[in-house]
Length: 188
Ligand SMILES: *[C@@H]1O[C@H](CO)[C@@H](O)[C@H](O)[C@H]1NC(C)=O
Image (tube, rainbow, N blue to C red; front, side):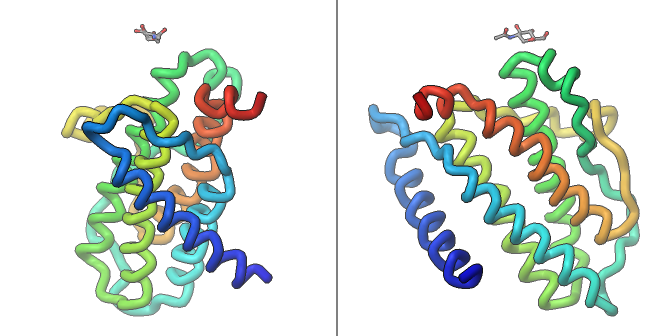
């Protein structure tokens, strides 16, 4: 049953991205908000799969430099105190950092299986950005220098990058989607 669910979700996500492409720039009607959390859950599952693949990687899966990644711990009081713009920017900054980090892994890994997982994770990050656009969350690109970017830290192994990836999606990304205004209206 979980295998079938995975195939159904893949179809759903592919379809959804086609719809997003169509409705993207120039057309008057905004894309339908994507509020179904199963979409994010699917990306989280695939991020976990990458973490698992890392565990069986023996060769060509080391890092030679430190990589900047976002903080994943969530302090609910701090989060609640932030306005929607700040929350969105924090998540987008984290997604951007993860995109950079995974790009770096992609360039340095020689393990084919792990590389496929990483390619997939990078595609999923782009899909998450499309989901955010569908929720009318304004696109935000942080300043190009990650140096001194608030809420970042450095890790030294591929396993840590992949763990941060999972935790960031499960934490702040999920909170942003759950609280998105576009989805509150949808529920009522
Ligand atoms: C959100 O908070 C930031 C920083 O405190 C402030 O500059 C901005 O105007 C606020 N935005 C809204 C929509 O309230």
